[in-house]
Length: 252
Image (cartoon, rainbow, N blue to C red; front, side, top):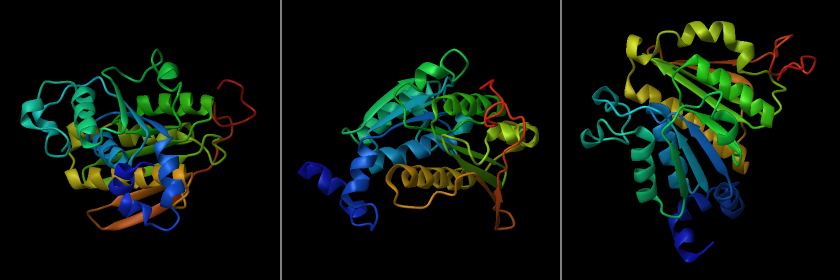
């Protein structure tokens, strides 16, 4: 590391268990962020601020006025522009030592495989069930971990999945998650700090996985009810016959 990097990251280098080895591991990593809304945009800023080596942004949407209360990377002047493009510009201004790549397109059957070519992990910033199913399937095929997050109204949840999916996978949750994701923020509403809290949990898990500075609760769904100020932890279970994680099913 050069003198500028040592000064920039000096505070986190003091953290026991992170130190120089953690910073070097973070700087060597490449992360795909799918979705540049309330979750993805905030997560991206913290990851780039911490010195992640390469961040790849994917989102087909343009910024709308209704995004601004919770997607604080954007301003009124950005309305109408592509989220991925604006966020990439902001991140590069934050930390010129980090490589930022952006794609104003959807993560789908056509783009998924190519987007994961040089990626070490995926952070989910989406707001729909179908895209998460694709992320789960494509990352399982490549043996990559991914970090799911969701928030609506006054509630949120997140899960960290290993590349091997020994703890189960998102497809194992598919029946109940489909109903959870059906409404979405546009129909049911959301408060900005709820999204931010979930995003920061995703970032902490991701940094823990890349550097070893913290234990990652792999395969545990953490649920947050901010109205009642309660949390719950629910370990996943591999579903027999799951097309993604059951080793006896060869349709992955």
